[in-house]
Every structure is written in C-alpha cells, then in structure tokens.
Length: 147
Image (tube, rainbow, N blue to C red):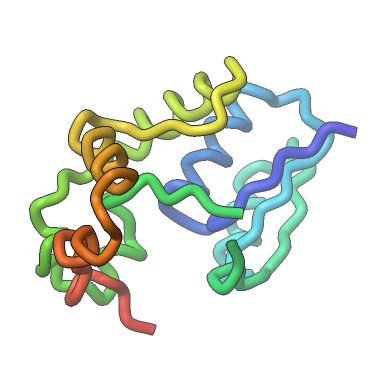
C-alpha cells in the first residue's frame, strides 16, 4: 500500500504539499492529512472525493516530523504576528515554488533543501557561528503567532 502523509495539512506549506502530491501522484492508495483543525481537514478531504483522504486531527507542535524552511506567507504566520524583530528583514518564500522544488529534490534522493540564496547563506552561518551569537540575529520577538 502506498500512502502519503502530510503534517500541517490544513493550510500553508502542508496544504500546498498535499495539493501538489495529489496532482503528481494521483495513483497513491491513501493520503493522510494531519493538523490541529479537524474541520479544515474534513473540508480539504471533501474537496477530493475521488481520492481516499484520511483525516487525522492531531497537534504535532511539541514533536520533532518537521520541515521548517523559514518565513512563509501563510495564514498561521500572519494570524497574530506583527512581523517585527529581526525576522522582518527575511524574505518570504513562495509556497508553490518551494513545494515543487522540495518534491523534485526528494525524488532525486536529496534529504535536505534550503530555498533562496539568503537562507542558504543563513544555514551555512548557523553551522559555523556560535549559537549564542546567532540567537541575537534570529530574534523572532513579535513575529511568532500567539497561542
């Protein structure tokens, strides 16, 4: 049995991956969508009645299953944020382009993908600069959604 599993599937990057995988691999046996919002997941599954979409309402925010490419223009980011602090200088990623590129990389066996030159440089710096210094440059105060 071939199954695709999507976390954070109710919106943003998770939802975009679900849509793109459905287009690219319509022959899969099942598609599992996981997110906190059961209603949004049911709505998403209802939009694809020809496919077997399994709805799994679950909060995975406390776990470690996760792709975090950086600043994305999603409802979750904007819902309760002010886009201030040091994150305000970071460019937004294009969800459609990042999703397609990440799938292409995965299909070629690449385990990691960092989009945009800005984030590639940032990733390299994070590996060589002490974390105590990097924290000062990655302050997200005022840009994290409030619970």
